[in-house]
Structure formats: structure tokens, C-alpha cells
Length: 282
Image (cartoon, rainbow, N blue to C red):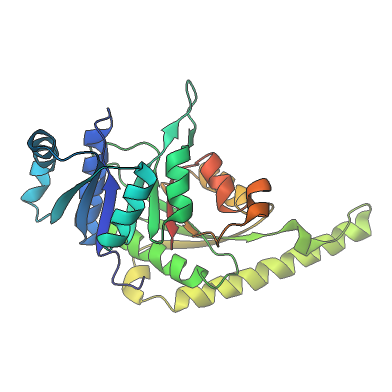
């Protein structure tokens, strides 16, 4: 993706209690980003179904929403993934599940499979709303990775379109990089010096990334750089929760192997317990 944004947004739609909220969220986002919207229904086509979807989209048609509804029977994961490819969807919206009696959200088994296999960006919604809830604060990963520059640029693009007032770039630094055993005052001072050097290094790297982003995307938003030390994925998720971020933007994970499934890391920590809405940039 570049600064032109997402051209086509897709969302799987089922006749659940969240149907109207999901469609409203997707339609609003499509209008904000200037995207086409594709509703994907896993099941047989019928006039009754089409009329329900069309009626829910009525309030957005007058605002210029461009959309289509596609029906396809089969395995939900395969249908969503194949339709994403066929319709050239570059942002797929997926709803999270709420743990019973707890204000915590997670990605269900079907959504997790789609998230792992999709070749497009993914937006995970924890609490879709019929009426718009403003996105004020965006947290984005700033870790050292080839994908990070594009991910940070995407965060600023989305923030600009949604009218966010603050974007925090979080550089997760592994505790392994400090690698100083603290057992007395001398080693504590050494650890503090190492952490400060790492912090300055990370801030300089992030400043260079932000400097390369078009000025129209950065000029009207408050920008903060925040180095944190800890386990990657878990640390930034915890930070986003504590900072009450409205959106967490992350790099898409690399291809997973057998060991990744045994010892989950990075994005897997986020999928287990979503701190807020999460945008995974492919």
C-alpha cells in the first residue's frame, strides 16, 4: 500500500445481532477512505437477503458509497479468502468475539485462520457501533523491520482520514538487547545507560521514518515516540490498552511455521486478547 490508501474494503456479513453495526462501521470507513465496499455473505443468494443488506446501506448511498454484495456457499474461511482475491480487496474487516461476562475480546478460530492466511490487510473490530465513535488516538508499532515504514505511513494515512488527534509510535525493545544482569549499583547504572542508548537509537530511527511521510498526513496530528522494553506483541498490546488507544496498527506477521504455533509471539499475543481495534497492515 502507498499513500493512496485502500481501494476496496471487504467484510463478511451474517445475520447476527451485530449485522447493522458491522455494516455501518464498514460503510463509514469506506466513505472516509474513499473505498469501494464489498459485502461477503457465505450462503445462497436470495432477494430477501439482498433487500436486507441494501436497506441497511440506504443511509450511506446518498453520501456516495460504492458497494456490491457477493454470495458464495462453502467453507467460510475458503469463501472469504477466495472472494478477497477475486474482488481485489485490500482491507478486510473482521469482528472479534467477546469473552462471556468479561470485557475482553479475542479472535475466534475462523477469524484467526483468515487473519493468518489473508494476503490483504485486516481490521479487527472489538465492539462495532451503529453510530460513529471517533478515533482520537492511534498507536502503531515502530519496531525495526522492513515492513514498519509502510505500516507507520498507513497509520498516519488512516489517522488523517479519520481525524485522529494523536499518533504514538511505539518501539518495542526486547529485554535481550539490554542483556545486563542487575545485581548491584554498578550493574544497575550500566543497565540504565544501555537502555538510554537504545532509547535514543530507536527514537532517531522513528524520526527518520516520520520525516519521510508526506507533510499533509503529519501536520495536524500530535506525534509521540514511545520506546518500551519487554516481550514483543504483548508489550505494545498492553501499552495500547493502558493508553486507551482507539486503534492499534501492526505489521502483518511473517509466514508462520510449526514452532511459531507452539510458541506464539508478536501478533499472536494481540489475537489472544485484543486491547482495542487492531489494523494489521499487509
